Length: 382
Image 1: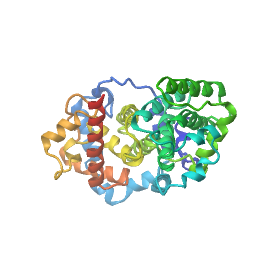
Image 2: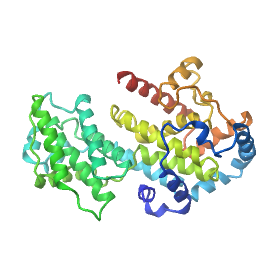
Image 3: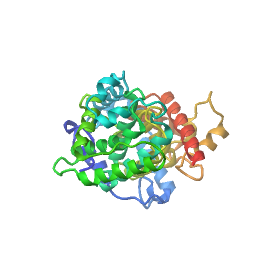
Image 4: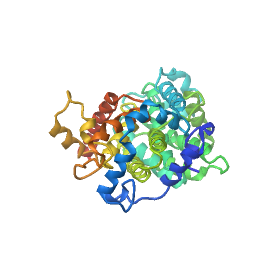
């Protein structure tokens, strides 16, 4: 299933299955928040009363370390998050010599690398990301494949020291999608004709715009794949923003005993939609997947009325009015939400967030402010 293939097999247990199965249920993006509260059909007052009983003694609960034990028994223990952090650090780490990486590339593509003025720019990245979104959809890959492919593209281009040319992007994009297909659906052959057609189409678009293009033959696809695999040292299964979000929502679901499951499902769905929009314009080199997911989750929990917006405001960096205005531009809601948690429980929920995301609240506040600022820029630019 989509859920189980998102995590390491060693951690595929019942705790995650419960949230994963619910997450796969389609929820209308326009569904009203009143319908995605923890208990469907209950009034807000009744829900608040339940949350008081559920979370009211949270500090005592945390003192006994029961929450951490529950999380560690799920599919997303701290050990897994630590492994993911290491993988992400390695992916963003010191770059391999671009000259060595370029060796296995097709001669025509290798010749285009390093041409002055033809490095991958933001304008060139946009069409590349769009092509990836179309390919992952037409290849029938799960939704998380898009975030994975874009993450690979951004890191690959960075590791090439900015030397990969626009002319090589069609072959690079289809090779990335091909590699993901082989890991996601190893039992099904890759549709080489679809990949070649996509690469040819984009090459023609480049020629129309006055740029040189590198023709892509099926036999050359393996060379592109080998170049990418060598760049990542044959390890392409590193976390992306969607897998991080799934981990955080799964951990919160386990820690809360499923009380907030429907709200978490809504947060997950909406977060994935927003992430796809943001990734169209923002490279993971600017906003790492781990911190990106932290910000999406906490901002989403505010929209789901499980966390007060004031809890995320970095006091010294932004005023109350400006923070509220900025939040309304993140795409989560049209009106400022009011937290349904009783006031005496809100601090405890904040402490729970620190445990679930394995981050201090101060770091989560910085993440939220950074993402809100970036989102404002993205939506303003259109």
